[in-house]
Length: 481
Image (cartoon, rainbow, N blue to C red; front, side, top):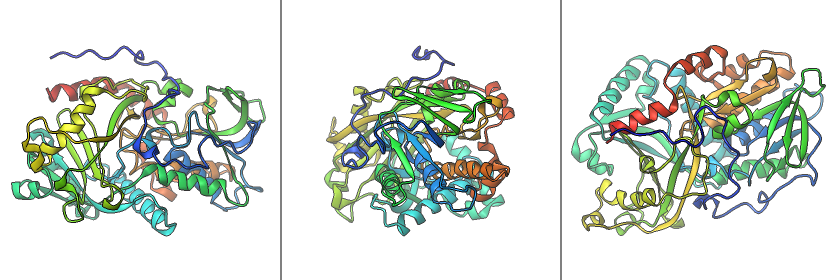
């Protein structure tokens, strides 16, 4: 069956700003009173040393690492302003699936990526545990059920390569195909499953809220957060002392350094990224657990994924004492998603799929009743940023006009195992630049940032010669029909 690619927005055109109204994410059901409508100063500052655009986990990481690093790179504390178009952490981080699940078999010939995701996971785990952050972090195995023969064969080959060449990563994975084990892990209809010994579930908004609140309430007040202040455009003048100006509805702010943590919306400010990072809408639900998944012994104890041709669903279960909700997302092929930036819409067909699919997919007894579905506590959408070459874009923007402009975006729905250290990498680059050092080399040394993630003119050229995000997605959907 032929498919047409949606017309809105036109392919290759910059994205819109985030919509003013958004669907009600479950993760926003307990918002931080400090962060709602927060503006550290009544007026927008006229200047700043660094302007961070975006207040999700990437932006929070950049701010955290810039302002908690006394390396002597500046003769005074940095003056950092964070701009957010809506409320703090109201974009993808506040709307995702609540997973942090590294995938070690995706890039068998580039182990830097697997090592980076592992390091990101361990760094987040340490931060949350050391700082006693109440964000429902729970370390647990990850289980990705595979429902396609071709994907199973690819996974088997990739795992074998990693186990042979990088056993420190390969030994973290097990491929299972026997029905009893698949049924035990709630994948009775899968052809196989990759079990990863470390993954986690969490309440991502609460993690970011803690990071930002800690910075905002520090005695030195190092961060100036301005919510409800969209960045409309960036202009640059190399002859100006501040080089760049960020234009907002509340006036301009001049700076030498801009860090974009804008993910799907990056091309609104950097039009050259229009064909490199494409917005894609995903849908989530918080479902009341059935009796068979209620109680400490019956609940899910893994972070689950469902992968096949045209299939990419994901599931965790919240703590029993806090409701035990099944946080289930996916069904993207059932509604418009590619190129869509409106997260105020909940697709009825996708919502129905999410309510009805789990009972049978997980082999639960309640699924024997035809038409049975789970009660939805919340249903919402969020906008992901899909990268043309499938890996994030992190680093300084090439070209004279981009000097002092950094980006960390394009996480392709796989942000939690990548964003924290990607944000740290950008902060390292900024700090190194203040010391007159090569920021890229410093960031790679300090964070293990994969070379494949760097923004270079050569990478842009290679990516544009490859398949577009839209064409690749249409092919994947076609295989699932």
